[in-house]
Length: 421
Image (cartoon, rainbow, N blue to C red; front, side, top):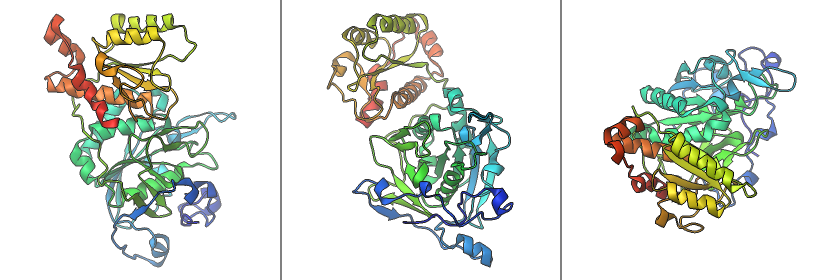
């Protein structure tokens, strides 16, 4: 079993002494074992430069780390990793005690690496309070960075969706030439067994290699590239896991390895220029078997005619469908706004035309996207990019410009989903 180096420890600072390596004891829950990987998993180690020995103690700490000196911007956005406990029942909330410097004080870096800290959104925000506006602001911050790499702490519930949003909308040059590593935690940072320490060390380690593109660092050294992962547990530290696709690589102790079939850089099939566009209002609706279809019909009519949503993602059964009456109504509104079918179970494909005549009704299926949230992200950025191509910065401006004849090119907007079938 490959062990994490002694500098990555579960002992508290009080036990180890301030600023010093804590212990040579490693919590086995955070180690990646062979049984955690698919049977066909193959590793390809990233090339790296030899480290310069600066002292006996530094050499002892850093000799095994296959990284190079980099300039890194570390952004904190909040989430559990930036929180502290607030009650005896285990509740927690954002805290100014866990800013960038505190969250990385235990991280071991190459002696030549320089880190610039950026704290976003004040003391940070919970995932439940994330909106499209926050993701757009994060994207603006990343575009402005001049560093070699970006490391970002993030809430786990919004992690997969924001990562997908950033991958789709950041300039391709940024993804082709830089590493952007996101990480979160399932326990607040003042927890006696906080998992954020392990994830942050792995994120900084990966950010100092030749990895190019955007990835999320999960527990057990998982290296995950959007969109094929999601949060699948409310308590387990190994909550962010691959869905509908393999993990891109691993961080084993202090070495970053990629699957041999993982392209470098890790890029999306297409990118979307949405800078300066007010993101359209896309709503997600679900209807499980047993739901009175009339209630769902009433909600759909209200969303389309009263609230004037710009697009709809429908989360249906495993095949991405619902009651016959509901599907009939979706076929009607698909002539007015983009509609996407996705699934409730949270894994598996929703295939085009398999359980519903999508092509005939101008509806998209979500394919291998892991969740309705992923489908909503893709529909949002695709429609926003189309608006920009029309010379508009919002749906309101498009409607004012076109008047009663305003009609979105729905097939073109929905063509983005062809990449994920």
